[in-house]
Image 1 (spheres, rainbow, N blue to C red):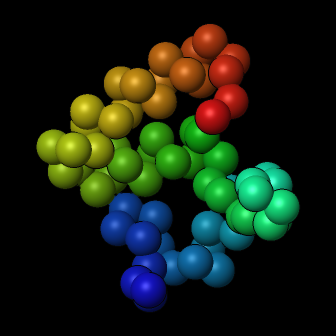
Image 2: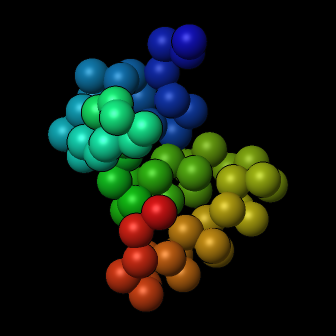
Amino acid sequence: MLGEVVGGGGYDALIPFTEIVRAFGVECRILTLDRLIEVKRAAGRPKDFEAIAELEIIRDRGLKT
């Protein structure tokens, strides 16, 4: 496990930007969609830029993944 998220800082710094979801009977903490987009943009990798376009569509349509 990484000590920090590229473009997002340490995990403790990201806690305020998370929400808890239930998946397969287990509660998981995930980044909010807006913060995930910000982190991916800051990371600046080509694969992140591809994902940003899709994430923005999901956000703009008000959909949850």
